[in-house]
Length: 122
Length: 110
Image 1: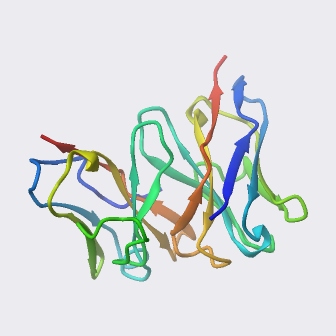
Image 2 (image 1 turned 30 degrees about the horizontal axis):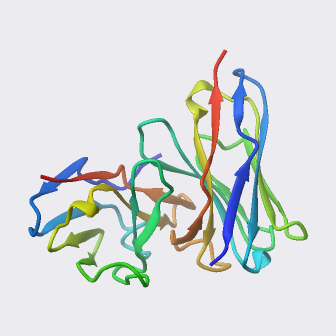
């Protein structure tokens, strides 16, 4: 089944940047599309971004487009989320999630990490 | 960005049957499969139904789901206290090129 471990969260001021990492293990990382999903305190799930298995395709939620960038290093079994121009409304628990396979259009996340908390506050 | 529409809450007594609806549009539910996630407090979500009506191993057969047109529903029969939690539907949207989540339904077992 595998495991996903996120890191990189913390407290950051509005307008600043932060990079999240998600390390995968126990499965062939390079065969799967990887997603980022966030959850603001007391709120529901919000999909953030996806990167295809080989890194050629990336899609973003409108709320983060132009500010967040997803990338991956399959040699390190890691997917990243570079966040710039952070806003208070970006405060959330950020999860990475593994798609069912290389196709990222299923909405079917078979494995989730435990999440890393990002707090944007002055 | 639009979301899939779910009722914010649902409830039932032990043993009852409860259904949770998820309404979308032609570009998401109408064109793609629906998945359902359960999230217990303080934990990451877990897929409970995938591809409209398939249960992963380990999910009780009390859980079932269906899809018709641009709507989907999750049914839980023989409700148990351990079923309490938040339930989300999710589907890809072909027009927006995003994954959409429903707003979530908080299930309470009275």
